[in-house]
Image (cartoon, rainbow, N blue to C red; front, side, top):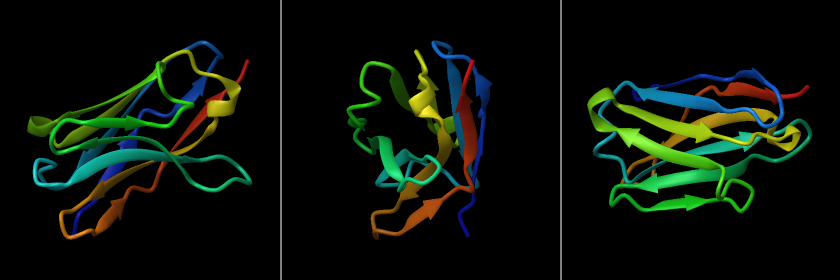
Length: 116
C-alpha cells in the first residue's frame, strides 16, 4: 500500500513563502505523474501543479509564476515551492501520485493559511 505524507503547511503572511513536501513510502520514479491539489473551505478540490515522468510540468493559472513543483527520486519526495502567497491560496493542499495503471494515491493533506 502506497502512503503519501505531506508536511510544510502552516500560517504565513501575504507575500510570504512556504515549501510543501510529500514523501512516499515507495520510489516515486515509477509513477506516471505526481502532483498537488488544493481544497479551500466550501470549494471543490482543484489542481495546483503536476510533474510527469518525463519532467514536464503543468500549473493552474493561479499558480503560474509563483509556485514550482519538483521531485527528488532519491528522497521519494515531491515538493511544492510557493512564493508570493495570497489569502486566496488558503486551503488544504493534497499530494497525489498516479500510476501507469491509472491508480491515484492521495495524502491526507496539509493546511496552508495565508493571513496577516
